[in-house]
Image (cartoon, rainbow, N blue to C red; front, side, top):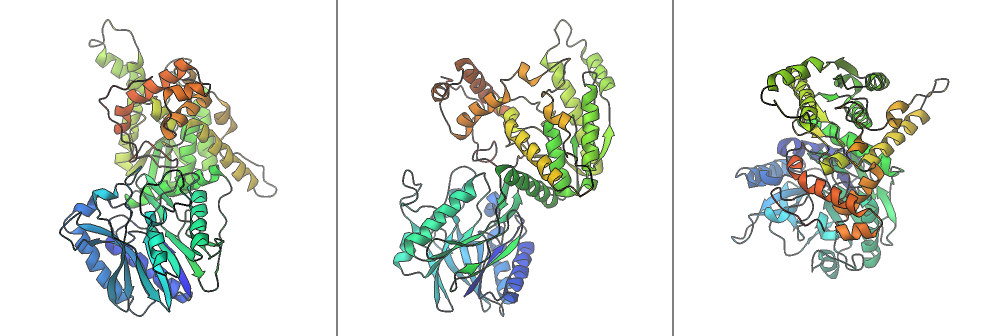
Length: 559
């Protein structure tokens, strides 16, 4: 009994295109001997569809596509397709999140998602009505219990401290005598999540003595990246299959023989983050219709890592690095940026901004008369650069990539309409210390892959990795003039943002009380900037994106 987990990269809203992707995958799976195919959650419309679901014609278009797909696949193995389906009841939300069985040209709702997550990036109760229980489909004598994503995330023997829901759909299914559990999923990537997912599903399989098969989406959709890594466990809880990481795959699992192929996981957090950023950047550009990218090259570590990601995601020939030196820029900033561009093989152009700065000074001289120079003039430099980059983006139809990291975005050490201008914030969820870790990992990867007889060369020049971080908006400026050392800052931010610790708890862990209060104040005051930032690729448990919902006009007790 071979089941194919169709780990496909869908485009949100592209119902016809996604149906074609599903059909192609089913045909390939059939050639491999599949008797049943399983897509990810909401694969027909792409996940997450968000408010597209509220459009009057969206769900009917999905139904039309399902009927056409069923006819197209009528002579091929049955397939469970994730799709939105109307709620037949006049009570509740008008849509169910469903798994639909296409078999012999017919369309049948196999199950309606029971547990609807409403935390972090999830907002499913806004759109869907909960099902009353998961369904069972019988294929070749096998009774498969069909669940959708969150439905398998509530086992009380695994989540002993806190559970989001009272009921457990898997327990109900097993009481009805299912022979195996299938799960259609669209679970976004975050660091460490796959290990938790595998332990949890292994526990479910072992507890009920049944195989558990999990089909996960792959690809980037806006700020979310899906890693794929579809998995299967036998009735002892032993892993028997795992799909590719951050790539499309068809994962074949023989349920009767308890066999499959296990693809190795990336070996480090840094490699996982790198692959997530590359996939997220590639898909964001591709799905938004951009063929190339542009970014500012400052000679610093942040723009270096973003440039490296862009070069790998899109190809070096599709990336333009722009040097915009000011009178405050050091010679090393220019030479380091050029060395990086040479290493990556990307094109550059240089646009000095000294004359533009003088033009702004002259234009504002009367309005600023009697006032000392301050951060305003520094911000003008950043905004000049932002204007130049946006002009190149418009003229050359390139996606502008911003280069700010999570540490800067957290405390507002960035300029709105300046270095924050752009279409995608590639490393906006990477703390500064993680930026360095990924950069070092990249150099180690690339030097270890060097050709025999060739001199090893670091992708990111060592001068960039060792220089003290600086925005270079005034003479002799260093980030440490305004911020705590990054290892201290990131430690505080991790506890505040991701672990949700109070100021008192953070101080109790050994951090200086005044430093903690300063960081908390900066985080609160920078909310208006974050609200206007471009989408940033999520790689941690709590990013400044769709899962971060803080008020702007608020007074917060800093403790």
